[in-house]
Image 1 (cartoon, rainbow, N blue to C red):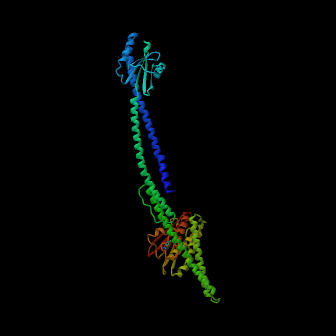
Image 2: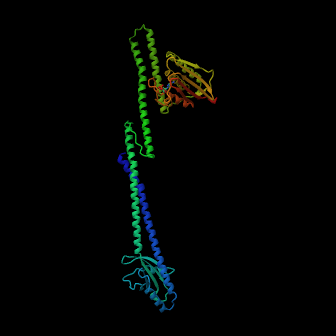
Image 3: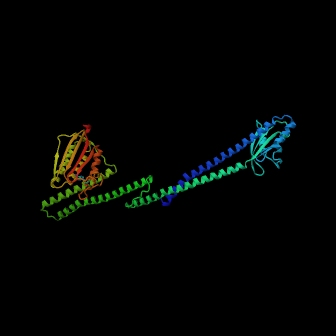
Length: 471
Ligand code: ADP
């Protein structure tokens, strides 16, 4: 994704999801407020018109004689005290305006909707909002009178909605200003918020691209203690782990190459010597063949270990389990190593118990583990050193202890020696995967492999395996 791509998409998403919705809500609230305010003002005006006309009709109800009635209507309309704000009219039974409080007869056609509605309504009254020919908005209310005089069969009161419209205009401007301020504040805060996301994201993406190219030196600067800060931490942690893996992988390749080269040099050297050797030097011939066989064996052990490791890595390592006599497997491993250790001046002591419970496991894999651990004990011992091996059963488990008084492991290396490729001592031969394979195999048997060590004093490896039937 390009730099602009990130920025654009986050900004657009923010604009649509947040800003768009807020603008919609503001518009809806404004329209609703204006609608409710208009309703309120118009209703109030209408209430007032109703109360005024009711007072008028109340005072007219006292007159039953036609001429007195007419005189009173003329008097009420002519003397109407609120002429400047309202127009009071008398209407004939043909719907014609016969009297007005302003004294002027309406010129031209006059919309009489409220009058006709009043004629049809049950209570003889109706109101209507009308637009005059001058364009002015008005509200009218008509009340039908008892039919004492034909030319005064209804009273109508009318007032302008100019003030209401003006007030609504004011409210609309206020709502618009408030909405603009809210949108402006959102834009400013959104801009800073997006910037605070986009800039670190851009840095993260650039640094991650560097990691992809194999440069793990750079670390991302953590700017905030939030989710982005956590992401920076995770990426920095990942870079550290990748850098370490890269280093360990290079060391592994170099130590495996070295491991392969040593026996190959010996094999090549002896093969050349044997080629040039006369047929009567049988002693040298035998020695040479012994070296070639021994080194070839070492090579194939190494290749086996590497294959096992790759099987563990992709989950292909399977066990062929059966009733296993640990004593037999341990005895074999000790036997294989006794001569090799003796040649190096290392003494192997084996405290063989008379009996051990059986274990449900893969005999050859378990022997491989014992060989590996004894090999390590011999490898990391100095000439004159001693390797002691004992086995016993305890609380439903078979325990095998393999101890040496060799170089030991530093406390800081101890937790890592079981991890793949880890070599605490780079000067000794080995690929750094033996303990990782052994630990995995013991784990697959439901057992445990523990290492105790003190630098300069020696190392003890404790293998525990569950007995068959838990005995
Ligand atoms: P390697 O093939 O290098 O021996 P391992 O996985 O068997 O690999 O062991 C990992 C590391 O643990 C070794 O490189 C070594 O530093 C340390 N180690 C293992 N066993 C012993 C031991 N008995 N004494 C001292 N160090 C040991």
